Amino acid sequence: MTRPANRVLSPAELQSFGDELDALRRRVTADLGASDARYIRRVVAAVRWTGVTGRALLFLGAFVPALLWPAWIAGTLLLGLSKILENMELGHNVMHGQYDWMGDAQLQGSTYEWDIVATGDNWRKTHNFRHHTYTNVRGMDDDIGYGLLRIFPEQRWRPFYLLQPPIAVVFALMFQWGVAIQDLRIGRWLHGKMTGRQLLRSAQPVGRKMARQLLKDYLLFPLLAGPFFLPVLLGNLVANGMRNVWTFVVIFCGHFTADAEVFPKECLRDESRGHWYLRQLRGSSNLSGGPIIDVLTGNLSHQIEHHFFPDLPARRYAAIAKEVREICVRYGQHYNTGSLPRQFGQVTWRILRHAFPSRAPAPQPLVQAQTA
Image (cartoon, rainbow, N blue to C red; front, side, top):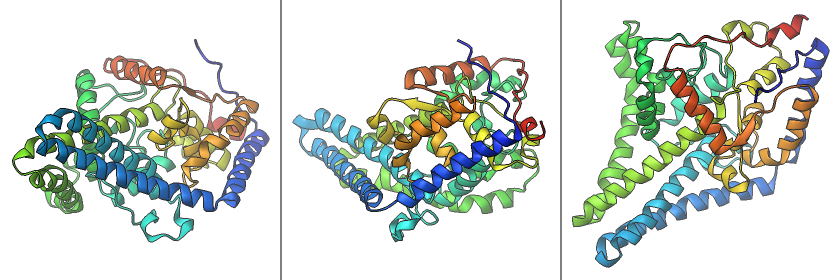
């Protein structure tokens, strides 16, 4: 079913739309306190103990042959859960500065380092700044297809994109590696716009992080199992794969569903706060599903709320989502939400459809409202 077009707002409506969302943000910020601090510390504990228990079960299966497969399955699932929680609900949200107000050195957004091969510093640059500032703006937001995939018809088609369905599968399985090299701008080197020396210099921090992660998951912990090295190594490999695929699914569902839009650079010219909110809304998609989905996605099931308020504790998004939706509907703006199967089905269709040439639709007005 085709959804109704977004209403073009008058300058006064646009100002009012932004003011209402700003006021909501101020109310939530003023209410932050002990319950938020208690929650994130429980998440830290959950990450630690699911990880410890998962690794212990992998070792138990290694040393008690009768329990090998039950312990291996349980241990791998728990370790994968630990990595998902650390990546989504802890690392991503902490690095947005959502808990800087606590003054806890371990939860500072500017220094937190997470359990993937990508460095925190590169993520803060490519995601916190570039993606959240220029959400879905072509030529500014590198998350549009990550330089590998044609997700929108507005992206120029090349024969290379015929390969994108299998490339997307590989990318999902190795998602942390794609995130790790995103800021290296390898395409600039391939096109002669960067020297090999410059590339190597920028790659050194990433290389060190990759080496640490590889040694930890694929050498240190497996070696502790002695002759049962391979089952433990395989458990770590599968746990990392679980986290990679889940992160890929959540992020792609957040921005590449059927109703998600991309924008030209021109939309940034004299962009007001209200226009910024509109662009975040039209470039984002939510997932329905309840508290379990919320936690496992790091509350990116509320991607719209996250893009409106990236530095608010994500646990608050579910509570404010009803008011955010009411504001959007009142101003005639589509609030894009749906179940995980529905939203990922749309993402999959985009990947398949836009592997082939396709014509861009007429853009919906965005910036024009400012001068109407």
